[in-house]
Amino acid sequence: MHSAGGLPLVAGHLAALRFVPDAVALDVLLAQVKTPAQIEGLFQRLKGRMVEPVLQAELTAHLGYAPGGERADGNACNGTSAKTVLTDDGELALAIPRDRAGRFAPVCRRTPTFP
Image (cartoon, rainbow, N blue to C red; front, side, top):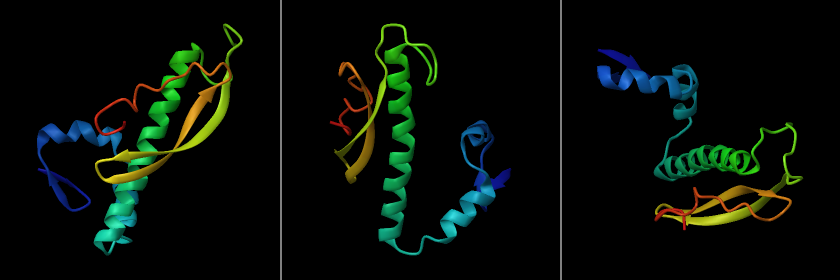
């Protein structure tokens, strides 16, 4: 059995480590968490940092080209809008990407936990 950050891992979870930041970086981050409020704050920040790239990927798929690529129909990324969404864990501030034509509607937000 291997461990990451002092926690034992079963063999089935080893593949998931490819998606986890360096174990030392996680240990440094977690060493700063001392209270339940700090844990909740960390979860909220991590949630936002995970959702925003998904939203950006959705916009890229909607536009049909990668950032910096050639525009197929003249539509383009037009920055972001600050939005606060209500989750099961409370409010979450996000930077929602938008397109110039105003046709982009993120799918990621249309779930029971991201109304």
